[in-house]
Length: 315
Image (cartoon, rainbow, N blue to C red):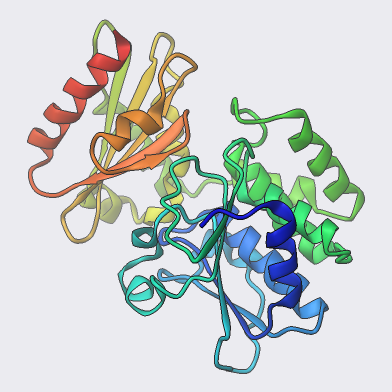
């Protein structure tokens, strides 16, 4: 059931013994929002911990906060999760039908929680968390500001994506005023790459395929590539962004092989193509300019099907 902002705020103010869930394959938005919310709830006297099916990747370790002494959760919240399947298998099995409140900004949210507050026009889940914390009269400390800024910058590509609004900039400015380490976070998130990553980037670009007179690009990342370069799954987000940075490309597609042999498809588009609608044809979703889905089995056949659908969106 959808609820309004005021109701979501009151639910948070009344919550005690809270477990906050992120999506699997976590990014800075889901982790930043979850840990910022945990710090805020603790500030109000509630106990709160964060759970991610995949743990916290090294890249985002600075966002994590130590867990509180184990307690039996009475209220479960998800942040930046559009569907229970995105929680990861183990977490979905334990909590998929126990989420009391979902805080999200995906227009494709499947309303799996008992109550959902969704702002599709928000550039990030952290924007929503920020507004909720202000309404709750939470003191946004430097620690909270750091985590919210990391989330906002992640989901806006350091404020380069078309989802950025004037409100996004105002929120970022306020977080800077509250002590957020903007420069340090930007360097960590966008300007620091390991040597192995550069090797992977080179391999992926060498294998790039172009279709429809250069209007569609297709990148492929295999497990063999990751193993050879020593890269981890969570380190390759910026490679996905490369798929639409080539002049003339309207739809950038990246096929990434997962450890179980399935393929995660990430799509990045420009203004004239809705990525979420394209991915929805294959059971996925996301945002208008950034979305994803998944395929089992042979990659060649999956790519053939996906490219056929992508071509229809160009026309």
